[in-house]
Length: 214
Image 1 (cartoon, helix red, strand yellow):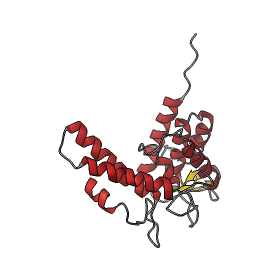
Image 2 (cartoon, one colour):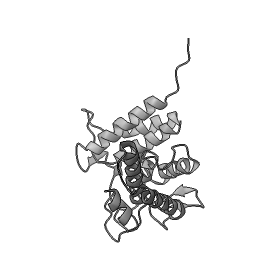
Image 3 (spheres, helix red, strand yellow):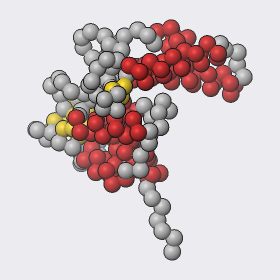
């Protein structure tokens, strides 16, 4: 798997969302190849397994360099959806979750703010701009987790509560939500939404300020 990532990372693809149309150099795809190299190196070292770790380190560093150069908008100071693009993608909210960048890195703070503003749909978050679809609920929980890990507790709770409000009376959530019609869309129940819900809740609990000692 690591060798495949090392070999294929330079090729364009259709991204996390399997976008229809021409393939692109999606930033999150590049970052996930970086993750494969990084975890392969770590696994080899921890298990004392023979592997071409020096070459893997070179490729890992090459991927990071490419993302930071071509997957970053220097004018706005944010990561972008794909190389050479100005567009955003909610999948960028997961970059700190896999360890590519710290949550409180200034670039990530600006990226989270830009996604919150530009991909907003009545308090929920779209995957990306364009297309006729609802807000993707997991993306809202990703945003809540990101804000919580950045120490922005009040903002995180607001985003979290809005996303949680889309569930039904049994607490089950769908894949998307039509904010205009007030209806669930897509797969139901959606496991990714529930996983993201739990992850965001844990982040908010762990990031909450400690109560004052009595």
